[in-house]
Image (cartoon, rainbow, N blue to C red):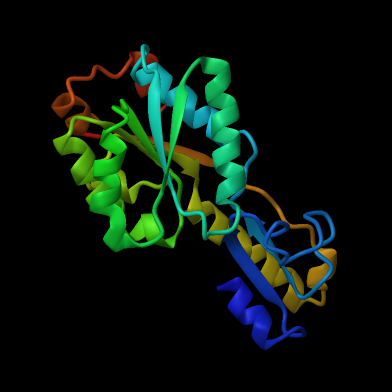
Length: 227
């Protein structure tokens, strides 16, 4: 959406709210000095992939094989996949990459993933995987696979756990940028900020269906437990 607006105007200020990789996508020059008519907030956090793996390891202490579902057409996802693989290597976890470029390809892709016998799925967010998130959660539950999402909605729909930035907080913080710009600030001079608030959501009903016992330490850290 940000790219579409930039294609229309290079003078009207634009405030983005949760772009994954604005520098890699060439929307801005740098986080510190955007340099154009765009500023705002990014959802990209460098150690987020490692933290998601840590949560899965707490939930399934003996986990050794995870499939990452991602869309290579979406900017920033290749970087996120690389960081996931790097973090997994240090934990002795094997990562299988499963590319999904359309919601209609989910079912066939899922069957392909099962051939590698994963114990859990990590779903990297983008418009395709977000649209198919509930379907992914349903398929995983029927095959008794744990799922890690980045947003709460799929966990409401049967996913096991989500960990990621609070998008509500990002939207609220965007209002401060609008306020500054209306008071005369230039987008090029307003540094792009990263998330500061994160949410851990757990679905105990799904955990029970999978035969999992969520550790009390993890439950204590959860921002919300769905039961």
